[in-house]
Image (cartoon, rainbow, N blue to C red; front, side, top):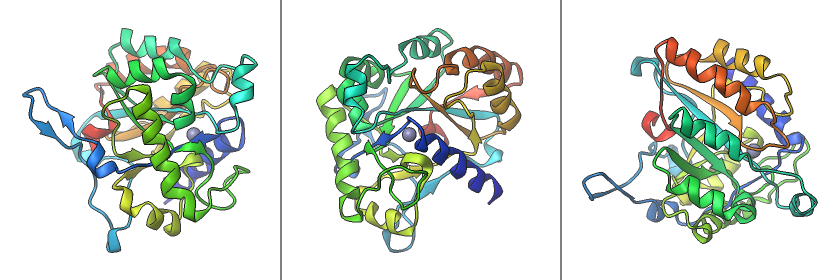
Length: 273
Ligand SMILES: [Zn+2]
């Protein structure tokens, strides 16, 4: 409860700033078949729906699963940020992706559909790299509840379409197998939002560790937040957006070796669910 509330608050603060945007669904249950190493198609793991088919919510894995940790990166860009991108603001962070590759760190990227439209080559490269998995952070990065730290609100009748629109944007960018996971913009959700997405087949993914990287300029402080917060099975939320999270790449260069030193193994969200 405490962790959850803290996480949601921190995420929504992020959403209130420049990090706006996220997702649109499609027919997730049908759209996410993955080829295994043996060539046999398999579906990514998802949580069972709640009562009445309610969208399930995943926050962290059981500690019994040992010293695993999932680093997740929100690739935020809001539906209305196109003019800012055209003016030179960078919502991508290729250096961060390069660092993850160099350090061989598996990661899950929660991408908005608008981000995939702006950076289709990067989106495709991330989507095709087995080190990574791409999940849905909405198309618009508008909020799925009222009062989500100033984000514009998606009407309940448009929630499913917003998630589907992101999956469509992923396909157009060349991401063949996005994962059926959805992160609510700002981390804000309620029963109505979970109900409205119940037919999409997604599992909502929250987190238990807030890196505080949004608008942070002190990489050491971000690293400390993560290193203090991680427990076995943790899901860490960070950002893959240069302009709004400029210290994240540098923080990773501290976080990754330190967690490995402590015996942690980095995994994608799909390995925790
Ligand atoms: Zn976001």
